Image 1 (spheres, rainbow, N blue to C red):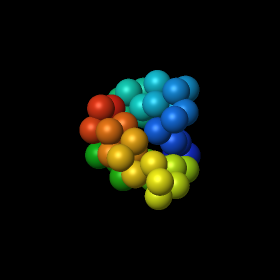
Image 2 (cartoon, helix red, strand yellow; image 1 turned 60 degrees about the vertical axis):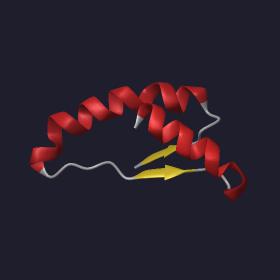
Image 3 (cartoon, helix red, strand yellow; image 1 turned 90 degrees about the vertical axis):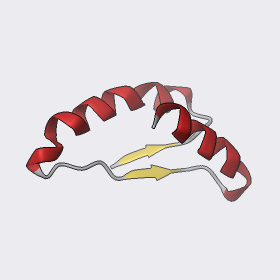
Length: 54
């Protein structure tokens, strides 16, 4: 489980590493459940963050 927010720079910086781990182990049934801590007022920031780094 990965807790993150669009305003959390360390959280966003970790995303490429999380992606690599997922790609390496997803064939074995591994998955990552991402939980955004952004509130509804930051919806566009969340969209921008996910579009930028997945």
